[in-house]
Length: 349
Image 1 (tube, rainbow, N blue to C red):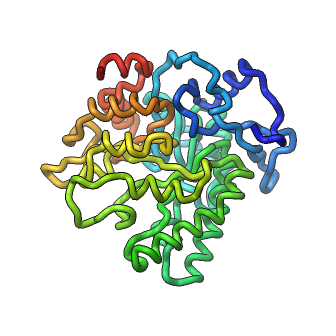
Image 2: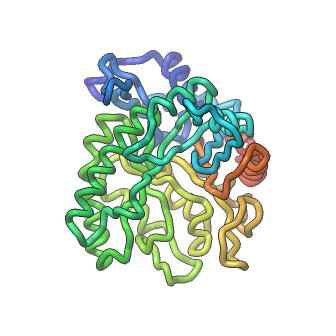
């Protein structure tokens, strides 16, 4: 614990983490939870989050979660509401997701984000805003050859981190650049500089920056075969030499290029959260979670091996309440989220 952080008793910290949706710290040392400081940061009068308390400080706890090793979240854009309160449409959307079984939600950051409305909807429905997703990083890349574009991307990154903190979330998902923006070395250096420059603010706000593995021609061979490794991504994360940058590993995105279970094991402690979708190698397309050909049993075994516990966010085609219930059920079928980590270990032994 850093000298500037007040001390919490172990029991109080456990209760605090549960309120944030983190029910176990065992094997989850890279995961952070917020600790609201006596003088929290704020923007436009909104309550901000204080410095972060890392879950590794609770590693003395041997109590395993009894509510499942994974908590299901989803991207906010997946939720379709037939009717909503004009004053705050997020209340109905969040209620639909909550009723479908989801415990968390991840909205996209944007300059026009209504933070107050989302915070109010979360409080009203009990749906946790566990993280956010960059709403700018495809159109305004951090690796653009244009310096003005990179400057704008940096501004949007900083604004996104602040919005994430004001929402009470503790992770920000980012696509750090695109491989077509220059040579491999140019793209890597620009991506590194952008994220490295944001680390002090991320630490100040208590928001972890998580890189998503996507089809962006970066840190993998886009035209390559299915035997690729996650090591380039792991090495890139390690190059920052900080725990404030990690990976939000999408379990479906790179099944075309490598074995999902092996990527999980290679990335290991660097994984802060998970995304999930299906993919069919046979058909060469993304699918619903259980409709592709990913070996989910091997993925569960890999997650158990690295002792991962935390959030997994759906990223598939959304819809109404019935559609969301189906998605929730598919994720449970694939990953057995409601089981404890010891149960997962036993069934995959």
